[in-house]
Amino acid sequence: MNASKILQQLMQQAGGQKSGGMDVKGMLDGLSRQLGGDASGQASTGKSGMDMKSLLGGGAMGLLVGSKRGRKLGGKALKYGAIAAVGMLAWKAWQNSQGASQTVQGSQGTGSQPTNDVGEGERIEVLEGELQEQRSLELLQAMIMAARADGHIDEQERELITQQIDALGADDELHRWVERQLSAPLDAEALAHQADSSQAAREMYLISVAVIDEQNPMERAWLDQLAKALKLSPELAAELEHQAQQAG
Image 1 (tube, rainbow, N blue to C red):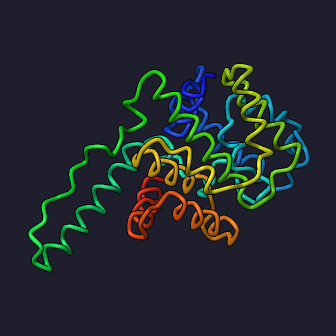
Image 2 (cartoon, rainbow, N blue to C red; image 1 turned 90 degrees about the vertical axis):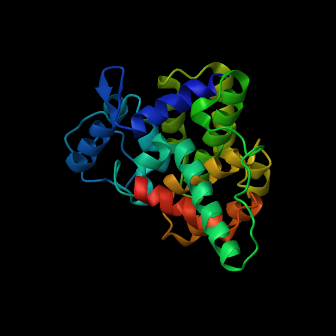
């Protein structure tokens, strides 16, 4: 599979970088304004008769969060910055939580030194080869599960997401994998089991926050289940959410 290639392009889209000569973030923002954030999810053309599939091109990320759930493509619900810098922000959240922990311990007179980061795992941005491919699959799976958490991705939207992933260059194996993820049961424990390190767990949670609406009870419940399955402390989960919000 070529999951790392697809994830890198999604991260570039999120960062507002041009993909294939096209500023995808700017395009999504423009479409949101032009089409009025249509939440019907039924038509493939906008109010002016534009072909949504053609205009979105590689905008799989916009489709992944789903306009049917009442979100505008490019609206605040999609936290672009958190997706673009998921590894660095997840690492920063861990460092901040460690610092807060050490402050509390110091005030209690423990004399403990900051926790060693050996064994925590590398950020997605610096991984290479098979390790990068594995982490990319983990993060793509987390994004898809988070996007499905409110239960409102229908068959048409699944088809659109698959088409847009294909447009980014997904090979046949990844295409079949995405289709399976779009129909598999939502299982936080099974998803958490895919995490290859503590850093991977933090990235999986943060990227889930980036595509979710915390005000939606079903999506909030998914985040809580995922944090528990990933064995994230309440303090770390809160810091990861803070980083996602700040970067969005």
